[in-house]
Amino acid sequence: MPSMSRRTIRKLLTSASVMVFGAACALCSFPVVEAQVVGNHPKVSIDLGSVAVWLGMSQNDALAQFQSAGYKVLGDGTMARTNVQDGNHVYSIWSKGGKIICAEREWYSSGRDEMDAVLGALAAMASHGARSCSIMHDTVNEPEQTAERILIDCGQRSVYLAKGKISSTNEVNYVDAFERIGQIP
Image 1 (cartoon, one colour):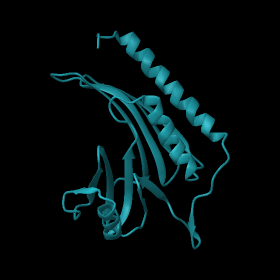
Image 2 (cartoon, helix red, strand yellow):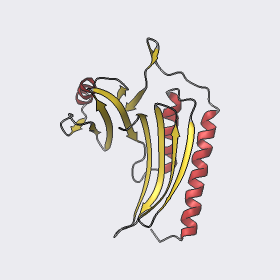
Image 3 (cartoon, helix red, strand yellow):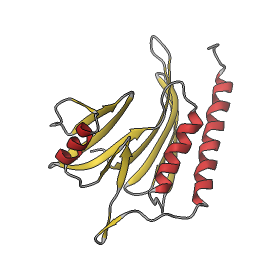
Image 4 (cartoon, one colour):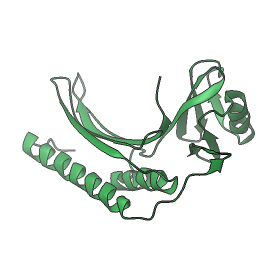
């Protein structure tokens, strides 16, 4: 890829931020879908491929579901963070006291359209009844890294979007679009 001027990169990042903000605003006009309810408490869940997990779910039950679905558990599953792999997709769950306290999935994969990842993450969040959200934006402008980052926080459900560049011996461009439930400890 030919090198781009800082002005061109800044214009691209600004355009991406505007598109994300526009997509988030557009989603606010959709009817709200209520989250699944168990008893009187909402069940905050996320689909990690073909396996659904939720906050408070037993870590052992989740690992059993991943294994029966043919996922590969990376590590021994006893750490606070466990990664599971289904083909090329890696999902993460964090546990405390044997219960899931956070889970996330990456919507972007190299070579795919970035906007598809943004729309997928936002649509998944909206379909689970996300409401009362706040949107936070920040810019990283350091010698080693530049980035535009947006966090759409809806309480126990969030989407994190980032596009940036890490400058070291080799310049690395990256795009992130994570859907998450809970908070990373």
